[in-house]
Image 1 (cartoon, protein in one colour):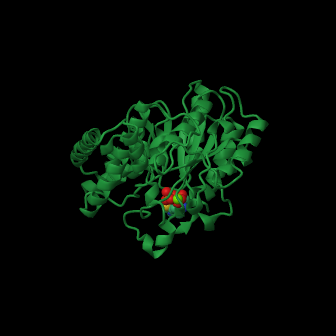
Image 2 (image 1 turned 120 degrees about the horizontal axis):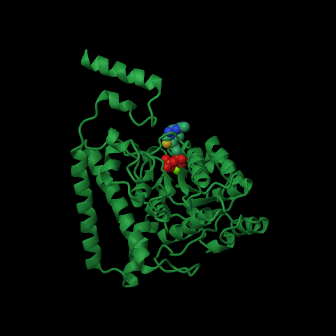
Image 3 (image 1 turned 45 degrees about the vertical axis):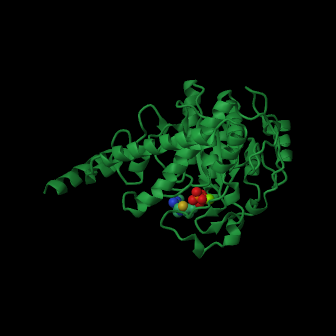
Length: 385
Ligand SMILES: Cc1ncc(C[n+]2csc(CCOP(=O)(O)OP(=O)(O)O)c2C)c(N)n1
Ligand SMILES: [Mg+2]
């Protein structure tokens, strides 16, 4: 487990990037392996103090401001979610505060034509690609309004079963390849999920068939109460990619400029026929597993030490203020916009009709199977009896 002793020596992500439009050569994979052989190394563009490492050029100012906005939208959802849960206005949901760089920076590298397969913790990623806030709230209210993919957006509903989304993403990526598009599929998973068979099958399948897939492995140190260090002997999860012949990148998951940078490279490679990439974002679950969890039962203050100082939102904030790209006044205006957007979405979600029992079967398949149709008729008959 490397989370507490992260030596953030900057490794250029370009060392693992083959030229556009080509498959990764053995030499490129060897270079990737060499670059990431030291478990402490990870790609970083901004130090926790907000200064540039010089490992690569920073994204342009407009992109940096966009990333800040996306992280603030995500953080606001997370903060308000806690309050709404305590008020009985939102169900149990998994908070992701502190993981915004890992989620928003990666999702921001996609376009609305691409696929996104999120886990239950990836609201920040889904919002970044355009999932309406009201739909995300509906999901955590167990309302059918949150169960389907929104129109014009290929964001799957949040997956609760661990790791099943990985093979699904490979299927979607291969379908895009067959259709001859340049669209890619991005799938998220946790450190715990990466110990499941589906994870390994998906990486092998994607590598063998050159699926245009980007696999994001968010190593947040914990799978509920199980620390990463005790569920695997692997200390650098990105190196698992080597076993499947695909590039693996390890990135500071609390540095949004770095997560965006490496993900853009991986997305471009996939679009250009270069196949899949595994990206390990090294981050930490500073919050409980869900809002109903009590992490003091299984981890100590020592476990958590140092992570608040690595807060991804504050890191970019320091940089933007220092560079004059944002002032306290312009930030205040942004925060007001973010809060107003959320309250309008909450009102919209409050206006959704209460679900009826038969709706539990909607959205399971595009066309209901005969069994589902029979069950639906039965539920309706019971309701009307
Ligand atoms: C197939 C399956 N097994 C077990 C569970 C119970 N479960 C829910 S969350 C979780 C831990 C997952 O940890 P990780 O993949 O690291 O994701 P994180 O919660 O840290 O984001 C487990 C075991 C589940 N949802 N699905
Ligand atoms: Mg985890």
